[in-house]
Image (cartoon, rainbow, N blue to C red; front, top):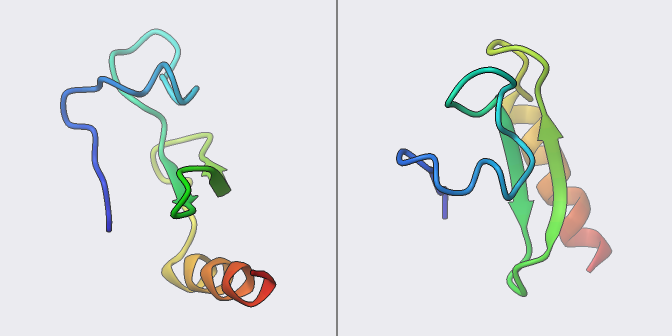
Length: 66
């Protein structure tokens, strides 16, 4: 599933709150079924995001490691 935080309730807890603003920096997390974080990408700017191919590569890599 793809999750979102439109009410900004978890950005502080996950360490992705943008300094000086009430919003998150671009962040992508791959979360295991046991709720642990398997991979994360924290962007520096609004445009700094992993590509779809990079995400798929990470998912494939993690799946083969399990």
